[in-house]
Length: 180
Image 1 (cartoon, rainbow, N blue to C red):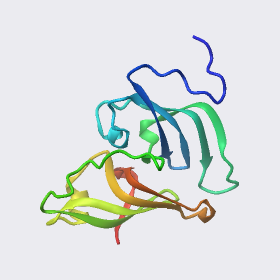
Image 2 (tube, rainbow, N blue to C red):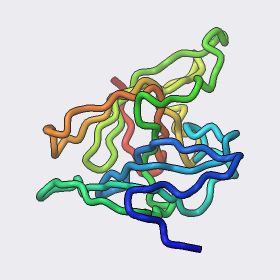
Image 3 (cartoon, rainbow, N blue to C red):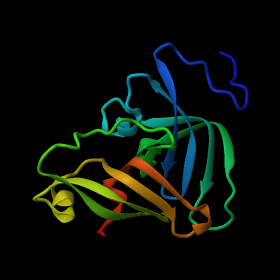
Image 4 (cartoon, helix red, strand yellow):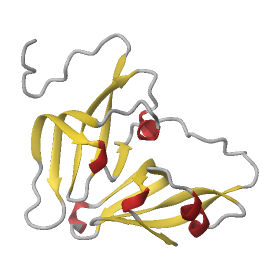
C-alpha cells in the first residue's frame, strides 16, 4: 500500500462516502473528511453499534481552544478515540434528514444551554411533553444525546464566532446542561 499524498483523500470503495465533520474534545476542535459506508447516517452514527473505537479524519485540521495562541494545525490523517469525543456534527451546509417525525404528538423541543469545556451550545432537547430536562437526564443514560438547532460558541475565544448546525451529538456524562 502506498502512502497517501498530502492533501488528498484515500480512494473510496463503491459503497463509501465522504462527510465533513467537526469533533470537539476537552481541549480543542478538529475537522476534516470522514469516510463511512454510504448507508450510514453520519449525524447519528456515534449513537449506533457500528461506530469504531477511533474516528479517523482525513485532511484534518485542529486547534487547541482552552487558551493560548489559536492557530490551526493540519494533519493528513488524524485518529481520535471515541472516548475523547465530547461533541460531533456535520459541517454546514452538509446535513442529514431529521431523525424524528415532527408531527409526533406529545413531544416538545425544550431549550437548553450546554457547557462543554470552553464551548457553549444553545439548542433544543426533544422531550415528552410531560418531561423536564432534569427528568430526562435522570432517566436517560445514553452516551451521546442529540441536540437540535444548535448555536455553538467558544467562551474563551469569542473571535472564533459561532456555528449553527441543525443537529449535534453531545457526550452526556461530560456536559453541563442548563434550562434556558
